Every structure is written in C-alpha cells, then in structure tokens.
Length: 333
Ligand SMILES: O=P(O)(O)OC[C@H]1O[C@](O)(COP(=O)(O)O)[C@@H](O)[C@@H]1O
Ligand SMILES: [Mg+2]
Ligand SMILES: [Mg+2]
Image (cartoon, rainbow, N blue to C red; front, side, top):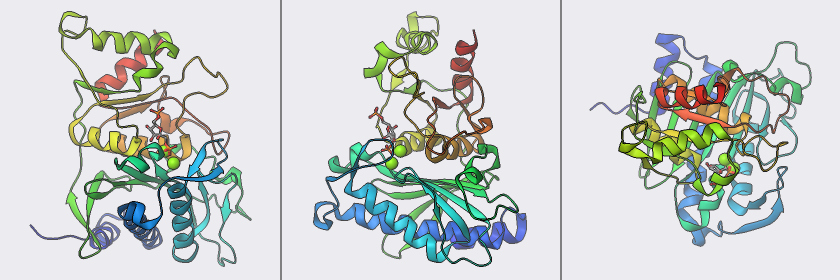
C-alpha cells in the first residue's frame, strides 16, 4: 500500500478538490504537530511528571489535571507561532486568546478541548484532544468572543486525536472523514483509513448508566427498551460500552457503529448536559455527519444550534443514524 502522510493528503485535497486553502492546511498541520507533542507527554506518564491534579480549577469549576494544563499550553504555543489564526478558545480558559501582533490578521478561529477524558489520565485509559476551526467573520476588527458564536455548520474543519494503544488523528474538512496513525518511530502521521462510514444500524449503546434515576422520560424509555432485549419492543439484544472519554467512545462508533448519549437530566436545569457545544459536541457532530451518522441534542441537529456563549453545554445523541433518529423522535413524541 502506498504510504500517504498527512501533509501529502492535505496537499492533494488543496490541489485537486479545492476542499481547503493553503492557510487551512498549514493550520491543521500545526494542530497535528501539537497533538504529536501531547502524545509524547501522555506516553511518559509518571516518568514525565504529567499525572495527578494541577490543584487549579477551570472556568467550569472542574479541578484541572496537570495534563489538562500542559496540553492547553502546547496547543496555545504551537498555534501562536505557526497557524493562520486570529484567536483561539479552549475548554480550559475563561476567555478567548487573541493572537498577539499578528498582521495581517489571521483568518481562522480555533477551538479545542485540549485533553478529553481527564478522569482516565491517571489510570492509563485512552484520552484525546478535540478541535474545531471556524472562519473569522469578515471585518471582525479585534478578535472577540462574539466572533466564535457561529453554528457548527460553519466549521471548516474538525478533528480529534486519540491517545490509546495507537495514537490516531481523525479529520474532516467537509469532504468525508479520514484517519491517520502516528508512526512513532518516524514521527509522522500516516493515512490508514479513508472515508470512514458509520453503519446506520447498531446493537451497541454508550451512556453513563449511573445517572439513570436523573434522566428525563424519553431517554428512560429509549434505554429501557434496549435493555429489554429480544423479548422487549426492539426484539433484539443490545450491548453496552462506556469508556468515559468521548474521543474513545466516538472512535469506536466511527469504526463499528453505535450510539453515544450524554443527555440533559433533572439535576440542574441551568446546565443542559455535561458536554460543551464548541469544543466537544460541534466538532464530533461534524465528523459523525460526514461519516454518514447523525448528531442531535434531542430536538434537532447539533450543528444548527446558534451558540449564545462560549462555554455552553448541550445534550448529545450521536452515532448510527437510525438510532439517533429514534431517540430524537422519542423526545418529540
Ligand atoms: O464521568 P462521566 O460523567 O461518565 O463523563 C464522561 C464524559 O466526560 C468527559 O470526560 C468530558 O470531557 P473532559 O475530560 O474534557 O472534561 C467526556 O470525554 C466523557 O464522555
Ligand atoms: Mg472533553
Ligand atoms: Mg477536557
């Protein structure tokens, strides 16, 4: 098989499909390089002093792990000097991070969840980085938070890296989804899966069952029907997986189908769900739709939500199309 690197693949897309500009290609390469650096840190574990808590809280009031902070800094530093960016925003930072002294102003906005699956860092389970790229609005002037508040349909690229037994990068620029594996000896990303597709049907679901008593009725009904198996209304047995790293759960779904759910529940009406629209739901929704799946908040497409704040949370249902449509229909019934 001909070995195709990430750079070769992006150059090909730029030349032949007009899918991306040279500036977007360079931006993606810088993000991919930062993910490679994060992957090296993850691999060192206790030997690199990257485990444990940083003893600080992020804007969401969550205690930050050392690796949350390290990964955020790696992405900021790489993109301040290398990308074609006007500004960045991160799950770990309260406000946006404009690029200083950039003239002319960069044309893109980058958002990221620098380290997804924080609770799995210290137990050596797969974790990742999720990112999303928007175009800066024309005539924006100085970068501001408002510029980021665009629906996910406006994303020009989205991707994630998963740091597992293999380090992989999954990427879409709006023309399908491709997967690259990090060649750890050569230090390069190599194309290993072209045009990933999510099967429309599945017998596998992912949800944190410990929250069951808090769920709203449509999610209770949907999950109960699956749990009833062959003798229930669905007339088939379902299997369950929950890794508690969205990247790892989504990666499994991209490869063999399934539905991932993090619903809103009755605990805190002011906080609809746990996952963040800009850093988790939107990029994953773009990837999943580009792979033939579906992604909703229970009411409509995640990608059509008009954000009202940077750190907004949303309920998430994504994966195999027919299952996502079913649970969405239960919300509307
Ligand atoms: O611990 P819970 O409630 O099962 O939540 C797990 C979910 O939280 C997350 O870890 C949130 O991401 P962060 O680690 O970036 O905060 C998701 O990756 C995962 O799906
Ligand atoms: Mg996350
Ligand atoms: Mg995170």
